[in-house]
Image (cartoon, rainbow, N blue to C red; front, top):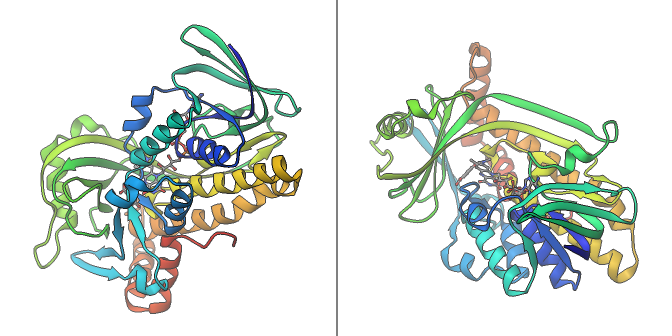
Length: 394
Ligand code: RFL
Ligand code: PHB
């Protein structure tokens, strides 16, 4: 099987699928090559918070029909220090901006349905994908699909294949610089058929470690506990998870989590990572393929959306107006937003987690920072501005 297209896309996560759809809206054809099955990518439980800008992007692209109905608009978040919760009124602090809680797998389902309705080409379960000649005008993606050899000939390759993908490692060493930080903890996350602890997302700084209460609907809670990076899930039967969640989320007025059937359980490592530049020849990296943030700032999926928005505009300017300047500027444009999100995610992570081997100094700095945020409008406003997402084009 041999196909020719304008943009060959590796990866059918939010980045690859949205890029393919945005290009389609601009009359530019693309082919998506994905290692996993459709069912697998549609059921992978991950992010849940969409910035205002991401919601706007999905709306402008005509992808918000279900999001409008099922997405939960949140006007605030809660920061819990010990047993006390403090509300940050995001809407009031940012002049009207809000966040929307809508599962990443729902975004992915909506995107796949739209791509297939528009007769978009997605090769699921494509094995051994490789990219070649992307330093020339005859870039190629090769793969195996149902025992057949596949080859996509394209003008550009979009590397949207996540952190463990093949695109970034295909760039010659020396052409790319990596900035990396691994944190000494991870998150144990569960999805539970239970009423959420609160109508808003709660971030907890607790002497036993960080906890987070979020949701996917009024009936499904998403909860996380700080754990060790090498945590053995077998040591965490449901009872122990609930007990620990009660300990960390209980308030002095007796509020806590509601228990229910655990539907999913997993451990996620925490890292900060940026590859610069996000382009090599005719290969453009987008989303987790280029950068990772610890999930404490809820930025990962939003960065993926922002990258492909920039990339789709640049490709459109190239095909429709013969302009290369936006493609040239792609990496620098994206990295500005990426580094703001990297800083914010590191800041939230550092302020809210319990660091092993921490002496009293770090703890007192955390306390002081939390105090500042709940007592100073300027500090709360800075957090809120970053949380809802910096405006596009800055
Ligand atoms: P994805 O979603 O990882 O998609 C990459 C796709 O590429 C495929 N692939 C390959 N395909 C072909 N050949 C190969 N060799 C391939 N190698 C990989 C993969 O199968 C996959 O389908 O990357 P993308 O599109 O860049 O999207 C990024 C987001 O998924 C990620 O940043 C977020 O999930 C991060 N994240 C959060 N982001 C937010 O914006 N808000 C949040 O609230 C939030 N919470 C989270 C998160 C991530 C978490 N985990 C599990 C890492 C919470 C958690 C727990
Ligand atoms: C989630 O709902 O999964 C979620 C919410 C906020 C975060 C990370 C994850 O910071």
